[in-house]
Length: 307
Length: 307
Image (cartoon, rainbow over all chains, first blue to last red; front, top):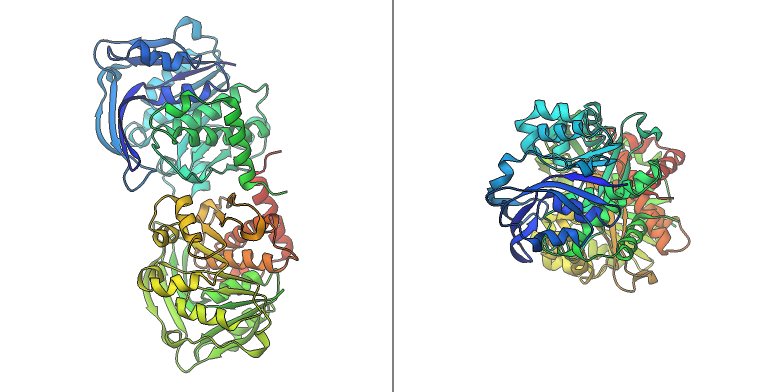
C-alpha cells in the first residue's frame, strides 16, 4: 500500500572525517522517500525553491516516487550545513537557512488522499497534526520529532502524539520527552502520551521497539534489532529518516501488521540506515537493489541469531 | 573445566540514584567468581586485609568458589568509593585506597596449577603476564584492562596482550587502545596486537565479539548479543566482571569452542551483567539459580530473534 511522506527537502553541506559534500540533495522527506521506495509506492509532500531543478526531481522520480506534492515556492530551498567531527552520532550545525521552508504549509494533492500509510517527518508538530487530520484514509501514522520541538512546542507536540501510531526518535529525544533517564521507563511514559509503539534508535547499536499494552494485539515485550558494525561511515546525515523509510516501507508492503512483521520492519529500518551512511548524501540510496537490501537483512539477522 | 580468576577483592561504597551501600564486598575477582560459579568450578587468587572476615569469605564459599588462593596480608583490604549520578555507565570515583592491594603479587597455590581456563582481571599488565606465564596448563585466557593501564603502562600491556586469547573491554577502552574512533576498525587493530577474539561491551546495548582471521577456525564475522532493556538499574558496579564471569564460565563448561558456543557465551555474559546491576553489590549474584539464568537467556534470545 502506498505511503505519503511529509517533510523537508533540503540542500545540505556536510563535513565528516571522510570528506565533504556541498549542496547535496537532502531533507527528511528525501531520505525517507528514497528509502521507502524499495518496498512500496511513495508520495511526497514538501516545498522547494527555484534552485530545485528537474535533475533534483529526477533523483526521486527514478525511484518511482510520486513528486506531484512537491510545491515550488519563490525563493531558495531550505539549506543546512553541518560537521561531524569527533562524534559521528551528532552533527554540529554550521548554518540553517530555512528559506521557503519557513512558511511551509503542507498541501495534500487530491490524488494522494487515499494513502493508507502516512509518515510525518520532523516538522512543526502543528503541521504534522493538520496533515494527519486531513487524511481520513490513513491506517497507520509514523512520526518523527526532535529536541527543538520537545523543548519549544511541547503543548502542540503533546496533541500531535495522540495522532501518531508509531513514533520514531533516538535515545536522547525519548529521555527528554519523558523527563526520565532510564530507557524502558522513558518508553512507557512516551507510550502513555499516545503512540501505540515507540521505536528508539540507538545509532550504531541498532534500535528497540516498545509496545503499549494491547497495541497491535501482540503483547508488550520490547524487541531489539542490532545494527551492523560498519567499517566505513562516510556521512551519518539522513540515517534516521532512512531508517524510518525502511521501517514504514516494509510495514506498508505487508498484508498484516503482526509482531513478526513489526520485528522485520525494525531490521529493515536498520538495514536502510546502514546503507545511507556509506556514501555522502543520498548517493547510496539512489542505486540499491532489493537483492542487496535482503542480503544485508540476512547479515543483520545472522549478527545476533542463535541456532 | 575449572577457571582460575586473578583480580581484586575490595570493599565498595557506592551511591546511585537508587540509594547507597557502604563497604559491601566487591572487586573484579569477586564479581567474576560469583558469576562464573553458576557454570563451572572457580578458583580465586587475590589479596585481602585483616578486615576480610569469615563471613565475607563465606559469600564465595557458599557458591562453591575455591578460596585457598586468597592471601591474607597485614593491613586493610582495597577500598573504593564512587557515585553514579547522571550517567549509569560511568562512576565518579570518590576515593581509592589500595591498601594491601598496592603490593599484590599473585601467588598460585599448587592445587590450582592444572586450571584450563584463566581470567586475568583488571590489574597491572605485568602481573597479568606473570600469572599467565606461570600457568602451563591453560587452554584459554580471558583478560580485562582499563584506561589507566592503556595510558600509563602501554608497553607492558602490549606484551600482555600477546598472551591473552579473549580480551574483554568496553567501547571507550577499545577506541583508546587502538587510537581509532570507528569501532570495527578499532577492533581489527586490537586483534592485530594479539588476542584471537575481542569482546567489546556496550553497556545497556549489549556486546559485540570480533574475531581475528582464522581464530578458533570459525570465520571472522562479528557477532552481537543485545542486552535486556532494564526498568531498574540499582548499581552498575561489577557489571563488566559479571559479564566476563558469565562469558568465561559458559565457555569453560563446554566440550568444544566453536562459533555457536562463543555466541551463546556472549549472551550468557549479558545475562549475568543484567542480573548483577539489579541489586547493590553482589547481592543478586549470591542467590541466583541456573533456571533463572536460563530463563533470562531465553528472553535475551527472543529480544532479537526473527522466525
